[in-house]
Image (cartoon, rainbow over all chains, first blue to last red; front, side, top):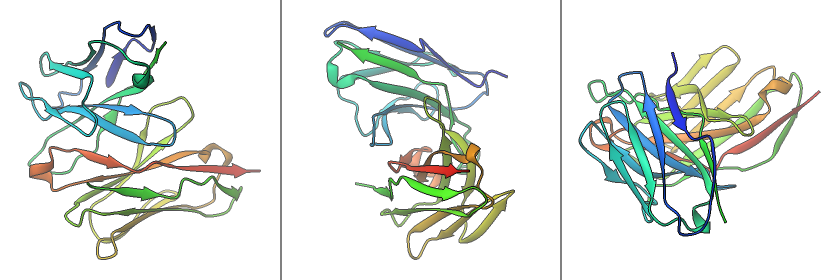
Amino acid sequence: NAGVTQTPKFQVLKTGQSMTLQCAQDMNHNSMYWYRQDPGMGLRLIYYSASEGTTDKGEVPNGYNVSRLNKREFSLRLESAAPSQTSVYFCASRENRDYSNQPQHFGDGTRLSIL
Amino acid sequence: QKEVEQNSGPLSVPEGAIASLNCTYSDRVSQSFFWYRQYSGKSPELIMSIYSNGDKEDGRFTAQLNKASQYVSLLIRDSQPSDSATYLCAVGGAGGTSYGKLTFGQGTILTVHP
């Protein structure tokens, strides 16, 4: 059982380059989330998808776009990378069940450096 | 803006002692509370969830919730060096309207020394 799979695990970009971070879950979860984690700042929500076909902004959406490709996949795109986007990016998913507050399950993360 | 506050530490305890980790939150309608453990360079791993006032025990871990005081804590009994990690407190809103979104604290670094 793979859970939440993120690719790539590491990436170095130059300022202005674009790239897409991929996330896929095999737990049949409805909701998916993208976070960034910076030293001393915990996890901050970038975008989320409550269900297939919907996406919405989180706390720090500027400079990012997302696509919920299908129920399994939720990608994060940096159109023009900036050094301030150097961070560790985590994807998470959660089961929706009768409005109950199920926990989120995380992928292994993508470590992104922008020079 | 919803806030979740943790003492960033580091918290250092001797092996075998009880480690006490604390978290306060600002949103009074919060309904779900989670503790995640994160080893250096790894992803967050769920260790406890609590939804009702009181204590919830799972092995060496006990989560305590006091909604009136907007306070949640995690106790680790018989601490082991393998418990050394960053512990993240996460708070969720009302189930139907929050879409499962969580607000995380900045994390508390715990070091258990032999």
